[in-house]
Each structure stands twice: as C-alpha cells, then as structure tokens.
Length: 119
Image 1 (cartoon, rainbow, N blue to C red):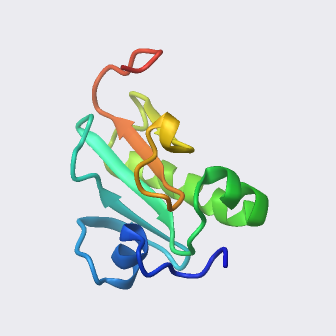
Image 2 (spheres, one colour):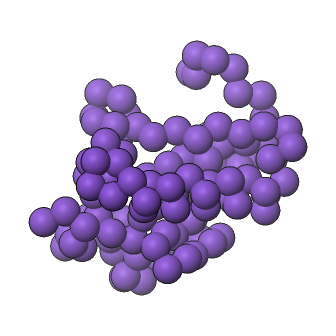
C-alpha cells in the first residue's frame, strides 16, 4: 500500500534507523541525508518518510508531502551554502532514468558547475 513502509526498501530502513545514514535534516515528514556516492560537493537526498515508489506516485497521492520534500531541499541548499550560487534538484523516475532505489527521493546537488544537459 502506498505510504506504508516496505520491508525490502533501503530508504524505508534509513527512515526507521535500521540502516545508518549521515542525516543532515529531519522533519516530521522528511529525512535528508548525504549520498554515499556524491556527484557534487553537496549531494544530499531528501526523502519522504512515507513510501511512494517515485516522484510521480508521490505527486499523485500526496502533493503536500511533495511540497515538504521540495521545501527541505531548499533548506539543505541553504545550510550547505549553495543557495546563493545555485543548485539542482533532481528526481529520477524509473530505472531508465537512473532510479535505483524505488522510494521517491530528490537529489540536491551543488557546489560545482552543473552544466546542462547533465553527464
């Protein structure tokens, strides 16, 4: 069921504390933690505590929770002092787009030049 923790989900295990992570922010509805394979000096994942398979499912089921994720992404950027120089918020949706953990999450990237298109 959407929103319910999934036993086989890495990010649900981070939310529950079963798997450690370098948490930088936590609210009632979200957790933000450093990516274990950073692609920029600031690379933080912001996830909803509730499980949704991807950003599209989260947006459809709980737009207010998606807004919480985006608000926290901005707070992460401010705390890491990349808000003035610019940062990127990326949601990969589906394996073809590079999503490897199927729990909605935003990547907050900053602290270096981020050309477009990425890669």
